[in-house]
Every structure is written in structure tokens, then in C-alpha cells.
Amino acid sequence: MVEKKPTLFDFLNQIYYKRMKYPYDKKTASAYMLSLWLSHDKSLINIVHKICKYQFDLPDKVIYDYYFDKVPKGRRYIKWVKKTESEKKKDKDIKNICEKYNVSKRESKMLMAHLERI
Image 1 (cartoon, rainbow, N blue to C red):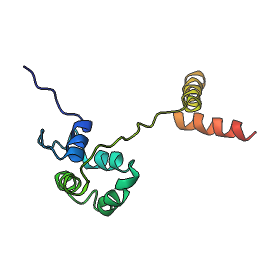
Image 2 (image 1 turned 30 degrees about the horizontal axis):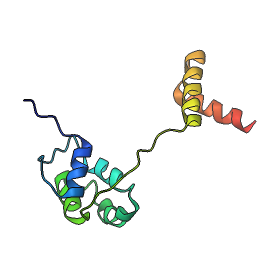
Image 3 (image 1 turned 45 degrees about the vertical axis):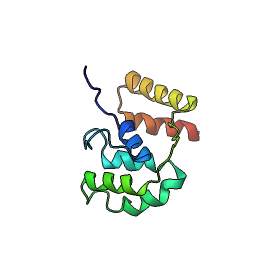
Image 4 (image 1 turned 90 degrees about the vertical axis):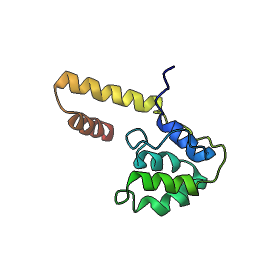
């Protein structure tokens, strides 16, 4: 039987439930992504903030171990942030401008911003 490769969410669950099922993998769950996801939970903001200033100075494994030790055990629900319909429409409009006028994405955003002011 082929064992599934762990995802970022598997590593987050290890932190939440204090169960080490998989060895830490920096490529799957970088310290930056762990911090990003953990910071969405208001009760964990202080824990994330304490290590945030060392984010790029410490090895990812050290930051993972810190979260594993400091995050209280328990079930957590972190809402996945999705684009709203207006953001999706704006992205589609930007893409259409890029294709129609053969300009960069940055230039089309500037054009859209200018048109919104008018």
C-alpha cells in the first residue's frame, strides 16, 4: 500500500493535536506557511508574534518545534480565505485588458485604477 504524502494541513494537525505521525518536511510545510496559517487564529497571534521576528534567521525545524511545543492542544477551525465575486471579476477584467491591449498586468491595474477615479 502506498502511503500518502503529508500536506501542510497534516503538519498543522500535528501541531494542534500533539501527534507526530510524519517527520517534519521543510518543503511541504515551510515555517513561513505555518506562521501564516497559525496567525489566522486570533488565540494564537501572541505565539506567532513572538517568533515572527526570527522567522528568517532560525531554521524551519526550530520554528516548527516551537509551534509544536507552544500551541495549546485542541481542535481549531481556520477559515480558508477566498476571493469575493468582485475580486474575481476585477481579475478577469485585468486579464482581458492585458490580452486586448498587449500590456502588462501592472499597467492594466494602473489603467483600471485610473478609470475608477474618473
